[in-house]
Length: 271
Image 1 (cartoon, rainbow, N blue to C red):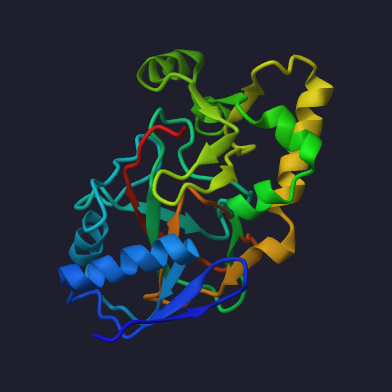
Image 2 (cartoon, rainbow, N blue to C red):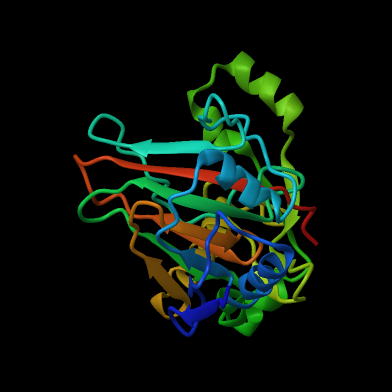
């Protein structure tokens, strides 16, 4: 195979051609791993592989996560099934990084388009390192070395009873992560926050100040000049480095159906 990577924007993302996910060897995986670190988001189209092959592809990069709250495939519990339709218009339509409520959040994810609406349903990605780089110096000085508390109950716990939430919090206690994360492989520093899961920031007791900081982070992430946007097709695979990007799925296709399936690679504790 002769793999080619065509950048999507100057900030991040590349379309990968010359690859067949049904036929992989160590040299191809090594090339993909390097491209993934270089571009943070890779798009691989026209890959009609089986679910078993999807799982096997994910395992080329590490152990796969079993999500305790998201719906999974019965025969392949490593696959998270995300469906939005006219009755359940859900599409992860907020800027976030995945499972930051874990003590060791995911390294990355590989998402497959299965049922794609005729229009809408794109996923946008933001370069978290570029977002950090563009913060004002006084903001950088304030957040460097500071930690945020991430809690699953901010999102997944909202539909639970008090008893269920307490039981799950015993299994998944709030996680303390640095606001500025250092990538363990590239050494890049990036903004590592998410409104979905950040409950508080250590040393920031004033709710108004907390909201001001979160708004500042959001504006940095949402700057279009630091993003790329992916238009889905069936059997398109998108893999992103959860340590270095935020993402947002556009919920703009009602009443059509959008169904995607994801495997997630386990990561390590942020520092």
